[in-house]
Image (cartoon, rainbow, N blue to C red):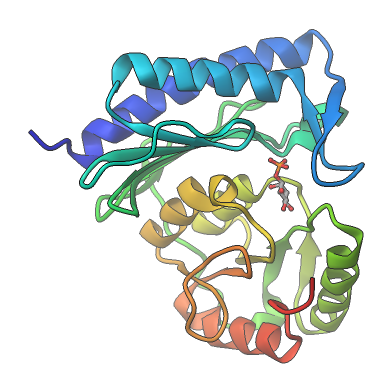
Amino acid sequence: GSVTSEELLEVAVGVARTAAETAYRMWGEGVAAVATKSTATDVVTAADRAVERQVTEELRRLRPEDAVLGEEYGEGRSATAGGVRWIVDPIDGTVNYLYGLPYHAVSLAAEVDGRVVAGVVRNIATGDEWTATLGGGAFRAGQRLRCSTETDLGQALVATGFGYDPARRTHQARVVAGLIPYVRDIRRMGAAAIDLCMAAEGRMDVYYEKGLAAWDMAAGALVGTEAGLRVTGLRGLPPGPDMVVAAPPALYDALHDRLADLDASGGP
Ligand code: IPD
C-alpha cells in the first residue's frame, strides 16, 4: 500500500537522530577537512561522508525500494513512478562544523513524485529538531511553528548565505550591499537548512539565497511553507538553484521586488 507522509516523517526523524549522534561524536573527536569539492573553500570532512553512508544504509534497510539522493555520493537507485526519494544533506553547515560553531544540521527529506512530503532538520550541536509534513504543519519540540508577523521590510532581520565560487560571491556581495540599507540587518549563519527553519519560527524574518542544491533546501523549505512562509524563486519561478526566497506573505513582495531589482538570481 502507499505510505503516508507521517510514516515517512517517522522514518526520517529516527534516521536523522542516529545520524546526528554519529556527527556529534565525530565532532567531539576533532574535525579536519579531508578534501575539497567545487573550490578550495568548499570542504568535506570525514563525518560528511560517514554520516551520509550511515543514512543511506539505514534507509536501505528500512525502505529498500526507495531512491536516495545525497550531497556527497549523489544519486543511488533512481526513483520509480509513485516511489519515494530521500534527499540527504549529512551535514549542512560543514564550515561551522569544521570551526566548532554550533550551527550545523542533518537535513533529511522524503519526496513522492517530485514533491517533498516530509522533512526533518536536526541541529547536530544543540539537538534542536524541526519537522514538517505536507499539509500537516511544521513543529519544533511539539510546538506548531508560525513565521514572523513583521510587515515592514525595513524592520526585517534577513538571513542569507554565500556560495563557494569567488565569482558568485562577488555577485552575492553586491546584492547584499544593495539590501542592507533597506532592512534591519543581515545574518550569514552558515547553514541554509537551519536558516529556513529559523525563518519558519520567526527567529529571523526572511531568508534568501542563490546557489542552493536540493539537499540544502528540501527539508527546510517544507518546514518554512508549513509555517506560513512563501518559498519561491524570483519572477514566478519555483525555488531552485537560481534563487530561494522565503518570506511571510506580508514581507514577500517587498523582498522579492528588491531582490529582482538587484538581479539577485542573475550572475554566475
Ligand atoms: C552550505 C550552507 C551555507 C550556504 C551554502 C551551502 P554545506 O551547505 O548551507 O549556509 O550558504 O550555499 O552550500 O556546504 O555546508 O552543506
